[in-house]
Length: 257
Length: 212
Image 1 (tube, rainbow over the protein chains, first blue to last red):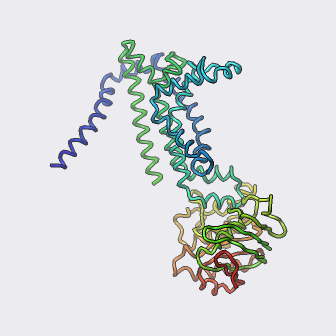
Image 2 (cartoon, each protein chain N blue to C red; image 1 turned 135 degrees about the horizontal axis):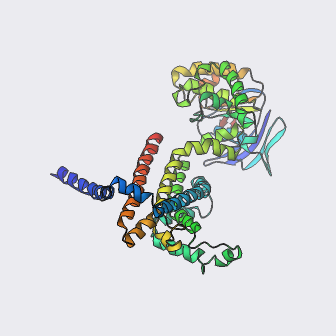
Image 3 (cartoon, rainbow over the protein chains, first blue to last red; image 1 turned 60 degrees about the horizontal axis):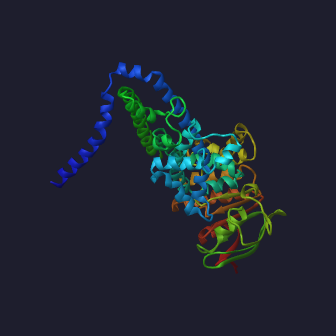
């Protein structure tokens, strides 16, 4: 009896997730999908999404890796606070994050005088899309990388040092390769989160086709403009990427185990 | 010659030692937790003493205001669990110290190959460390430590990771290998039977001080 109830509950929830996603695939014929996905609007959104997520991932790796390392290994005042701040964007609503970025980097924001002096405009540019993605995606990478670094046996790095390898080369030759499953897993999740970013982007970067309109924004605008088919075609692309990412994350996990 | 005069507060007592290690093997014995490993780590630059002086062949490695980083000390350290790099094969593990010193990878591998021959490891050149037996791991760790001509060699409980059956054989191998070196070698063990089998100079450490 209990077993049957558990089975029903489990099946219901899985179907609740799977069926709506499957209907996206059933909405369009392959030919119609092909035509829609190669339309200028779709290609432009794909291009913006690709450029911005690659840029935000690069920034995440560049800034997040040293941060994750010091959070895992360093002992300094405020480490706990820094650790908590990194996790915040996971729980802050994306629209709130967008508003916060606008208050900080917008035309009338906190950093406005500095940005004006440097002749840099951020809000409602492609760079704003990248910053919004960096904000929401980074924690996924830093959390995973931090755990990876923390679980490494220090004697490998110490052995490298006694063999004459300096700290940076030890990091590149020993630390990073040994922590690679955690780094790669975190990078994949961060990239996926950035690709799906909507709320912070629309608040801070707007929805300008060819400039700030990423795939999720184009899905939204399609629906808004009554072009449901375009929305569905772009949605299929996003869900397919999501499926690939989930599979990839599993493979990385298995490899590490 | 390693000259050592250091003190460091540990949890239960203060490590306070003044010692000199001449070329050749010196055994450092004593119960677990006597500060033996900490002393090795201080010589290698992996742990900082609270105060004191460490010098090898007249070169000061640690003194007030001076602390040479571990990677510049040229002191080889064989870790208790060997710490072989799991993502590198045996040959690249042994070549590591040579690559660190700026030799090209190809050149380092040729030179490492000779060390593998010397240690009877040639057949394992492309093996990953996790596939090796305990005795093989120890030989790889030793080849890796010696391949770049260190100024001193430190071995932390080199038999602790081995089972009883291989222990005696590995001990004899190690004694022969180490006896051919003319740098100071400090071998830490908490097992008195190792000490007797080795028949070398012995220093006993108890609660952070040289005893007897």
